Image 1: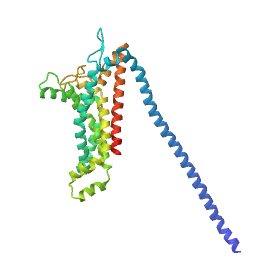
Image 2 (image 1 turned 180 degrees about the vertical axis):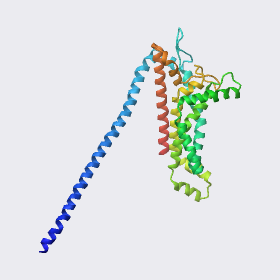
Image 3 (image 1 turned 60 degrees about the vertical axis):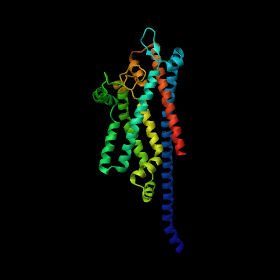
Image 4 (image 1 turned 120 degrees about the vertical axis):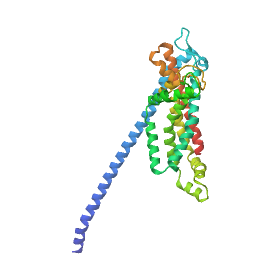
Length: 314
C-alpha cells in the first residue's frame, strides 16, 4: 500500500524533473547557437575591416608606385618644387611633407595640453552639472563638419592672424595649426577623460590619505596611471590632424611652398584634394603617389606610438 502511494507521489516529481532537464537542455542549446552565430558575425566584421585595409593598400601601391618609378624616388620625396601643370612639370613633394609634419606637430603641441587639462577638469574638478555641460559641448564639437571649421577659420582666425601680426595675408601655416588644434580637441578630451576615470579610486584615496593635495594626486598618481589611454588620445589626434584636408585648404593658403610659420603652405592631403579633379596622366599618378606616402606616413606613426604604448604598459 505504501509503495503504491510513494509511486503515485514520485511519478509527477520525476516527470517535472525530466521536463526541467529538457527545458534546460533546450535553453543551453539555444544559447550555444546564439553564441556561435554572434562569434561568426564578429569574425565576419573583423575580416571585412581587414579586407578593406588590404584592398586600400593594394590599390595605393598599384596606383602610386609607377609614378614614383618614373619621377625617381629621390626627386619625388626630396624635390622642393611642385609644378604639375608646367610645360616641364616637376613633382617634388618635400614642401607638402614638411608642411604636414610641422602642421601636425604644432597642433599636437597646442591641442594635447589643452585637451588633457580639459579632461582633468571634467573628470576631477568640475561640479557635476557644469561637467556634464562641458562634456556635451565637447561631443558637439566632435560632430561639427570640417568645412564649418574651415569657414570659421576663414572668417575669424585668418583675419585675426593677419591683423595681429601685420601680415599681407592671414592664410598660412600658423592659421592651419590653430584650426587643427581645435579640431583634435574632442578626440583628446574624450579618450583622456575615459582613461582618467578608469584609474581605480583606491589610488586616489590612498594618495589623499597620505596627505597629498587633490592637485598633487591627479598629476602625480592619476595621470601616470592613465598614461596609456592618454597616449592613445594623442594617436587619434595625430591621425585627425594629418588626415584633414578641407579645413586646412581653406586657411593655409594652399601654395606649394617650403613651410614658414607665416607663409602659405600646402599639406599632403590638400595637394591631392586640390588637383585631383582636373588631373590626368602622370600628374594623376603622382597624386596617388602622394596618397601612398601619406598612408605609409600614418602607418609608421601609429606603429611607433602603439609600440610606445605597449612598452609603457609593460
